[in-house]
Length: 610
Image 1 (tube, rainbow, N blue to C red):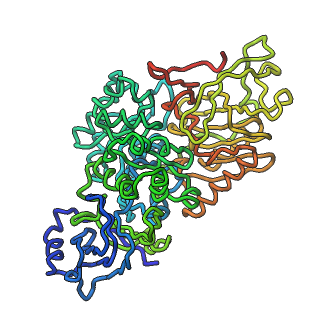
Image 2: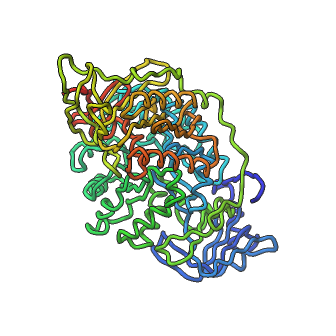
Image 3: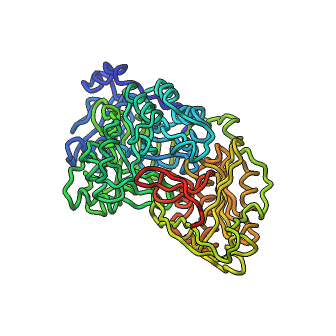
């Protein structure tokens, strides 16, 4: 592996004379790829016998013969017929959800062909405010990854009366962040869609701040696609949305002039249903983008990143060239940066991947980022200096490890031997939940879950405890569909998006033990099964590990194994369970202020007991 170094990306205006001189053959290229098969996403063609010449971080020449650009110092790669394609762009991703730092995320995805993306850092921003976002931006700039950052729009995700966060963002903060550089690209997903439609001053002010800065606005709309309020949402300037779960959702986004982002994360599998808008309905694919939103660290090893999503789309019947467009050019055009990224064409950054055929297999063999070979045969071949995270990012859990079993007792209405409750029903491979009801035995005035009167029940208690030292709020709910068939608990500070301490379980003792261990670690994940605690420390904001990618992936895999041992067989279970506190998703979720339900009128707090 090469020694640490920086990866400079020059502005096009600054290097025009050099690029033109190289294309003429008057000055040598730094890198030439010859004898390849060009995947031309701009023309929709597959072109054998093409070559590419690179000068600095940008492409100077694309054609059938680049020999005139080769000098004594030019590095020449013989593609030997391999495909030459633009590096993949993830159109919607939260790096924090991989539990990796930006640097380790880059090391994980660059060998898989992802050379850039549009990253909404609203997880760390909910914890630390603009300081967290700036930390992400600054670290991203040290890596080869073309990491465009979005300014979090929803901190909190809904309204302050429904949840407590570590920070708050408004129009002034959005306007400030938009001055940090061109790589601060957009306003992140506007999850408070009821606030936009109903004219909330803060939400509209943030959108206006982004638009005045010349940036685009990303969406998160979970009312039905044919709802008239989607038009009001689009009228506010929201021009892209990833909350599409049906083909009809996709069609209605496009009809409103939006881009539709179809996701295939680790635990939510929406591409198969949404891609039918193109494969069956015949919808023009130019405003369709493929995204992850998000992938766990072990799934990056087991399945891949955008390479996996593109392959999956092809398996659904999409033409390979079209699938590549959905993960490169379309995404670049959505964010108005197609002059820099998204295609292998002159003037663009030399973010290029080489693939072995057939193209539909999406087998990446070489990754070039900013004009440099950074990965070959699945391994990084360059390195860069380690980023120092500020101390404030490592001290965000302001709780004492003094939780007791009795803290998780849920008192029932007086005088009852059974109680009817609302249940948050988990849906495997979906981000949303369903609201159900259940009748639970009452023992000693409290709900009996996991006790002798409710042996091996599928129901679990859910607690959300405010962790920022602001209110001390604690709220409780009941969850179904987890599958625990023995005493077990899960505790974590990865509890989207407010990221308070969330504890799930059917044993009060194990819930307390798991929660205390998370507090002692200053954030992370703990699974308690019997007398065993399986831990994954995440001290950076309670969200990200300081460890290398491979170690984090193994730690995440251990968490998955422990959940399976407890009886939870959900696909990439933790990814789904971490969303139980995300109140902007349908139908029912839990914050530190109680059960929150999305209705046609917006958000409402509801009681646990029916």
